[in-house]
Amino acid sequence: MLKITCPWCGDRAQIEFTYRGDGALTRPALDNENAKDHFEYVYLRDPRRGVQDEIWRHSAGCGQFLKVRRDTLTHKIYATSAPQDDLAQDDLDQQGDAQ
Image 1: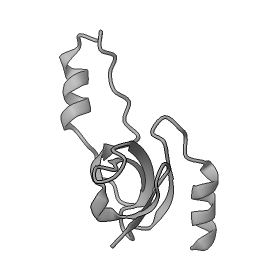
Image 2: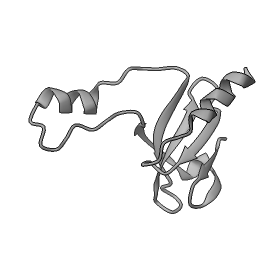
Image 3: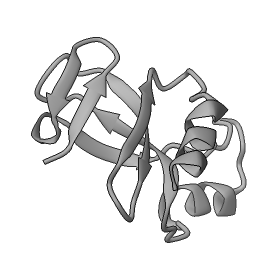
């Protein structure tokens, strides 16, 4: 089982969290009337392997959303933060050094 560090509650079991989506996507502006942009945001995803940023929700805890940097091949978690915060580039640099 994965251990995810909630920025508000600390280390918790994965079962307390719900995956909510890709953390690298940028939502189209609400006043953007181009239906194609909204369709692509909602439905089109590139299946990627490796390290990526994801949005999770601490659904069985504080209810907050958080950003998680996770390797989808090994499931190793490198960093967590509030969704509006940028995850440090150092986290990826350390991952490269460890391999």
